[in-house]
Image (cartoon, rainbow, N blue to C red; front, side):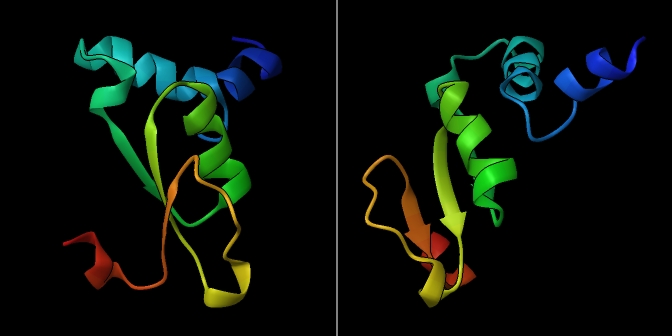
Length: 77
């Protein structure tokens, strides 16, 4: 496997999440990615069609309706 192939299959790429969807044999919208990195978790998950919840600090909050944002894990309930 080349370096580029490993990067495509690494967390932080849409292909990583697409592979999970295929392995679980579900639709992308049936999966919710909860992540604390907008660039490495949320953006690639959105690109793969997953629902997303961004766990971030108050100062990182963005005006973006593509994903839910939380600042405490209690908000997952």
